[in-house]
Amino acid sequence: MIQELFSIGSFSVSPFGVMLVLALLASYFQLRNGLVRLGIGDEEDASTIVFFCGLFGILGGKLYYAVLIGDLTMLYNRAGIVWYGSLIAGAVAFILTVRSRKIPLAGAFDAAAPALPLGYAVGRMGCFLVGDDYGVPTDLPWGVVFENGLPPTTAGILRRHFGVELDAGVPDSALIAVHPTQLYTVAASLVIFALALRLSKIVKFKPGGLFMLVMIAMSIERFMVEFVRAKDDRFFGTFTLAQLISVGIILLVGALAVRHGIRAEEA
Image (tube, rainbow, N blue to C red; front, top):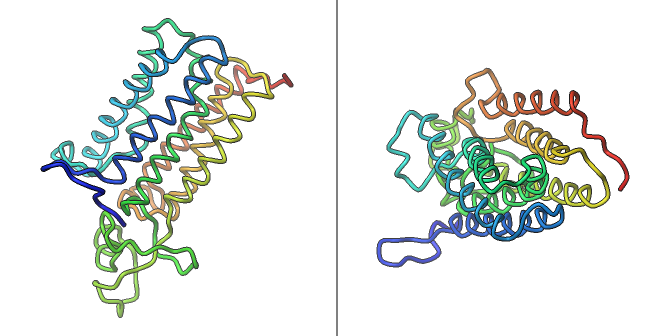
C-alpha cells in the first residue's frame, strides 16, 4: 500500500487525501446536477453545501474517532475518520446550509441522495490504497495482505489490536491476508448510487422519499460489512457500535417512510 504520494517540505500528500478531495468533487457534481434537475438550486448552492458538509464531516469523523478510542490527541493526527461521525456532523451542516440558502429541505435531501453513496465509494477507495479499515483474516482468493497498512496486517497486530484469534503457531511477524472490506463497500456503494440515479429519473417520489431509500440501503450495507471488519469496538457481543447505529437509522428512517410514505409512481 502507498502511504505517501509526494511531499512538499514537511507536508505530505497521501492517496487517502487525494481520494477525499475527489470524493468531495464527485459529490459536488452529482449534487449540482440533482439541484438543477429538481429546479431548486444551482452550482453555487452545491459548492457551498459541499464545502461546509466536507469541513464539518471531517471534523465530526475525527471527533467520533477520538472519543471512541478515548484519546483526544487523535484530533491532531491524520489517521482516523469515522463514517458515522462524519455523517452526523455533515448532516447538521447540510441542514443549516440548505436552510440558510432557502432551499426546500426535503428536495435538497433528494438531490443529495445519489451524491452520498458516490462520495462514500470514492472515499473508501482511499482507505484501500493506504491499507486502512480492512477486514478479518480470510482464505478467499481475493484476500489482501496490507504489508504497509494502517496498521499492517501482521498476526501480532490482528491479535492485539482487533482481538482476532489465530493459531498459536503463527508468529506475530507473519503477514495475514484479510478481507478487502473497503472494496466491498466501494462496490455496494456504487450499486446504490447507480440505483438511486436511475430511480431519480424514472420514479416520482414524495419529497425526501429517495433519500430515505438511500439511507436504508447504505445502513444495511454498513451493518453487513461490519461482520467481516477487523474492529476493536465489539462492545455488544459480536456487534459493533456502527452496527447498532445502522439498526437505529434503519428503524427510524423506515418508520418515517411507513408513516409518511414515499409514494413511488411511474414518472
